[in-house]
Each structure stands twice: as C-alpha cells, then as structure tokens.
Image (cartoon, rainbow, N blue to C red; front, side, top):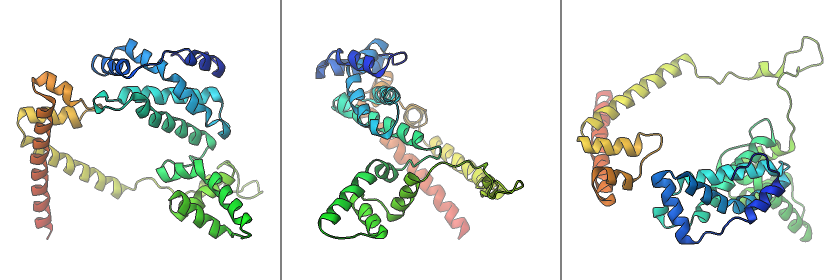
Length: 292
C-alpha cells in the first residue's frame, strides 16, 4: 500500500477495506516473498496488515507527532517485518510484525522528541514511554495513603517498578523536563563570550587508540582467515553465506543449492564452527604463552 499522498483518514479507510488473510494464505504469501521475492505477494501481505500498523500508530498520538508520520513509520516497521519474517518458525506474521512496528514507531518518537537523542537502550525506551505514567500512579497511591515522597524516594520506586537502574531514571527525568538549547549560544552576555560548543570535550579517538584499534582489527582478520583455512570448500561456502554476507542466507536455500537437506546444512555449519573455534582457541593460547 503506497503511503505517500494520503492523509491518515484516507489510509485508515483503505486499510479497513483490505482482505483478512487466513493462516494458510499468509504462509503462502510469506514463502513467495522470501523464496521468490514476489513483490505482488509482499504487497498483498503488507496491505492486509496495514490496519494493524495504523491501530498501533494511533496509540502514540499523545507524544505530539503527526498521525500521518506515525503511520508512515508503522508502515516501515511492517515492511521490515515482512522482509525478515521466517515462515518456517511456525509463528503468525501478525505476531511477529507487532514487535517491528512498535520498535519503528518508538524510534521515530524518540528521535523527534528532542534535537538531542533521548535514548536508544531498552531501559531508556522503557523509561521514556512509561516513566510519567508510573510516576503519576505512585504519587496517587502515596497521596491516598497519606504519605509524602521526596524526589529520591520517588525515583527509587520508579526504578524498582520499571526495572531499570536509578541513574537512568535520574537522567531521563532531566531530559524529559528540559528544553533544547543552541550550542552556539554564548556562556555570558558579553559580546566576546565563549560559545557552549567550545566547552565540549573532544571525544574522538586519539592517535594511539586509532593505531591500537587498527592493529587489533588486522590481528582478528588474520586469525579468522587462518581459522577459515582449516575448513574444506563446502564448509567455507556455508560459513560465508550464513555469517559473512550482509544478508545471511537460510539453511533451506543453501540446501537447495548444494542438494542437501536443511538439517544436513545445519550439521555442516555446526561442524565448521567447531573447527574454527578450535583453531581460534589454539591461536589465543599461543599468544597468551608468548606474553607470559
């Protein structure tokens, strides 16, 4: 379903008219896209579940982002889910897609909440989307019990409730309550006042760190090359296709090309990794012995 050129109401109406897929049809479309890159099958799969994406996008309207932008991000998450979905796992596509849709919307909301990125770890995301709700509930419960909580007690209870470190709560509280300021603003009212950006520490890598990192990368590359040399041609092919490509191939596709079952390819892959692990461990012991 094309998203450009439609407002959120138009998209919602189109989505509600889309077909409902049964499990068998959904599976057939997923296989057609994964194995044959059938774009018509992908379009049909995406269109059928666009109503799910729109429904999830509507839950994030309170963060102030335009609904059409939220739907766009939800659609991108839905397409990522379709591209990464493995029908062999026996899970319904809608169940799998929910995670990707939610992740895409949350990333968009957090990117646009402030010019400074609010956070990207799981604990920071959990705080961003839940802290104020949890804080309000804790304060209501304390008030009904006639208790007064200081800031430290409140932060500690939020930390325990959401299951994140206390310092993350303190950091997120400051970010959510603050405003964006220009780093080009002067630190004083004087005409020659230094800008705030001049006070930032240069956190770029120093020359010695660059040299060490380059050396370590070269050493790791050499170890990997030597470990790969211990494999036969078929094992090297499987490892390259499974682990060294930008988009790893499935066991089934490799089995079709090699004339083997999916299980046999998995066994060969495991055997190859065992050989490589033995080689790498041997090289590591030699380095440790040399340094001792």
